[in-house]
Image (tube, rainbow, N blue to C red; front, side):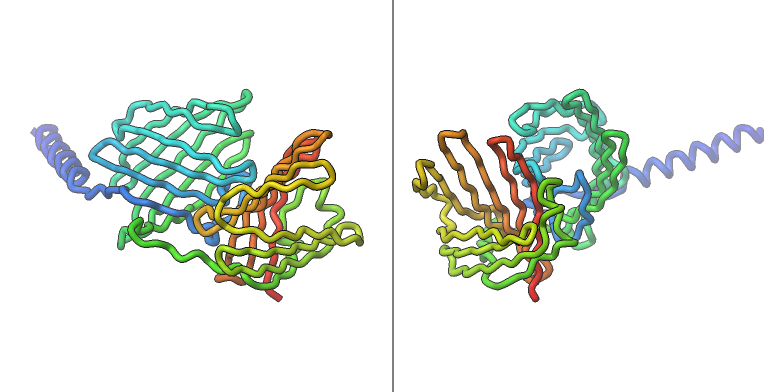
Length: 303
């Protein structure tokens, strides 16, 4: 009868384990969550900014995601069932729609989202595990990405925002000096970049900005004054049509220019973010067109 007693103990333990799993409180992730960009280690696959607007009802979850990378800002609506089955969504990657397959499962109080996508013959695997802090004010996303034979691990912290509260926009006024070592520059710019300065006068909605970069001993100035109302301002210069715009993206200021001329069209954008309590400005530059594509991240610190 020993085997019967052992079987009885095994069954009792299994039932106790099952009851323990059933009694685990599973969090509800409904809310607006914004990533803390100042508390993340940079990598080729780490977003510069990200937000999730989540509606979580039972085993169904809908996510309106906005992600900013070196390639631009991308939005996607993702709909899933938390049922261990494969769910497919389509996301925009630089104007190309890509299908993403995902499987969602619970691991105790942690939600696991395992996704796979293929683009340009390359396959990317990502596993993101969500949990909430004890106050349910921080969504912790432990993310693992495998792509191009590399593996990246990161912890993203997203703070819950009260959508009924109007957030006061930050004041960018001040003077900063280029931190060359902290800046991430394109191969054509990096060897020549030596020093620089940034000066901003900000009286919302008026923003006057002057950036000077010294390249191979020669200073290059970028200077403008615009209103942060996201409206287009059209001007002409030397036979070229220049369309300028300045607006807010969360707490970041985004300036864009579209230059149209006989030799083609060029677009330039700068995304300005305050970091380290206002002691640092991160200016992400993207240039496209006329065979001069560039991506630069300029970092300026207060003296």
